[in-house]
Image 1 (tube, rainbow, N blue to C red):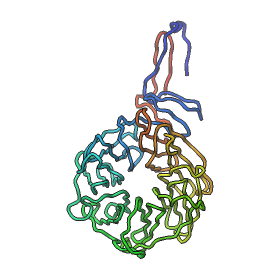
Image 2: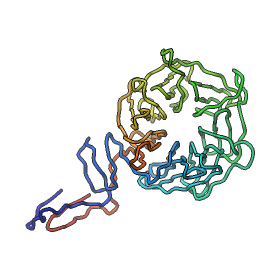
Image 3: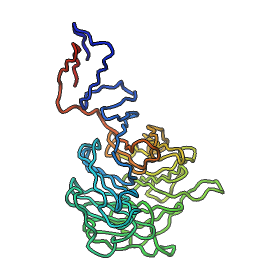
Image 4: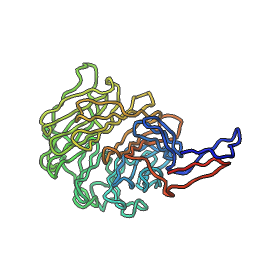
Length: 378
């Protein structure tokens, strides 16, 4: 509320209030927060303070989360950690081995202090909030190029790379290779891996490859999926996957590809999003009806967040982000989520954050008087 007192404000003087959390915006209209973040569609832009490419993220609660990636200027990859829901980040560069091209590609946090990350030189673990990192004790997981990572609990997890699947039962301290031979012959690998229980898992990757295991990853069988009818179109690479229980699953990839199952993967249906031009990178559902997809328009320097409220039967655009190619997404509920990726234009690197409600200032309600003008803020 603004009240005019007897003394007017001097002409030509601009008043800028920089107190965190006290600015109000009209519902449904974009605005600018105190740090230059643009808000629209429930999502706000946050500057990251680095130009690294981020490929993975994981939050353990609305406050504490991790992002991982790499850059030619940070050998060994980069890890970011936040304790305020993504408003500010603290970075650790070079946590892993490798040269300038070594990157971290995925991360899973067990709690506020412990996390596992995988990348171009294998797996890494931290037990102190990312201050220090260590490699697995021995064997598999050391030196492997890994893209995807998933854990069912604090001990059992799987990781995958171009031609291998790794399994751990001690939280990533040691790893064993699985599925070295598939039902089709040759090695099994991919970009994204998900398990719905200790036995049933899925693996997706290059050239529309989709694999299924019913024995915890020991053996894998190729799963046929519907593809675009365009005869000249190469099979799309698949990048994102999510499951709600054992029945409902979604997979996304190149050329606007969305694959959906409602019978536990026995059959799949195909949808095409963004007129087949969108590069879809990640998908996340918070319940059986509400889900989000992130992706970008190649060579356009523009990312899009799509949302569904009918289990993926229809999708609508919720947010656009200029200058970025979003590559990772996490929603912890319908009102709280994050998306991050790669800067492709000259403006500062940014991520998107979705908030359930506006943040409030920690200083509470207070009046501010300047040149006779009283501002009451909350």
